Image (cartoon, rainbow, N blue to C red; front, side):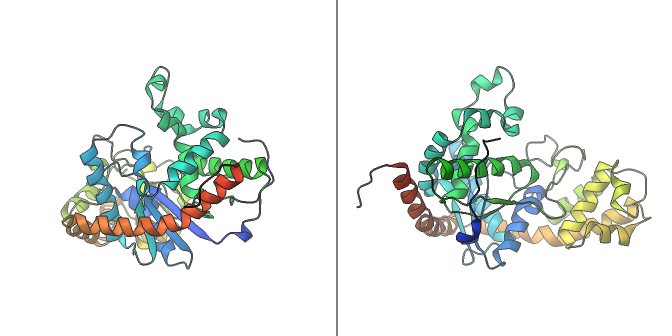
Length: 349
């Protein structure tokens, strides 16, 4: 994408993980398996972890203010209910740390229009005359995402496949900044894409990603669904009449079946091959009840805990405020050094 730059070694940078989710409403099983469950696993890795509610990204399309506040708290509740511990991970919402926006402007001046035009998500969301109506913020979204990551000198970012291109752009921006200013200041961040279900598909159409915007509620499992609803949605999930095969290759032309095997593997911690080893030759009449039981055991306690947490929004706000203070303590020195490198004068107050 960018012109070739000499990448610095990340050895000089403290290992640090950053990732975030938009608080645009309706956490799903896809959010849990593709992101939040992986966040929880990484917080016990011994590496410093920061997990953000990226509310500034959310307003690249219009949001009702009260809904945005509620959704930000709901996302925080989802983080906490799933096992993120504010004593182990820094949890905060993006808008409380102004360094994100300030570094984002610097990166707007480093990134190139051609890079942004090639972003797949931009092209998917804006076609023809629709592009003229899109916000400038939506166009510059990847530059702000780069700032989110690099303002903490994050070395690793757990993301789904659909965000990999944005992390690649982050690497390009870091490399170009380092090259232009002849410094070795920003790390070349590594995307972390792993796990059995980093891309969870619709329960009604295995060719489409599970989405909160799908008009059919049965296409997804919401983290707010109770046990009965979770089980019902698994039972109603689209499948086919064939038994499960002995290997993953046998699922290549069976997207709905493959999706359910991936979900079982991710929830159980088993490999996909091990799941097929257990269920090979069995039909979905045997497999779905087992998957339903597993999904209920894994997800229903999260739903209950989210409900409890949402009854005390002041406590959620306190946790996010404390996290923002810790995040700012890391981000502000990085921003100050960036502005010094660029040549800006700042009074030392």
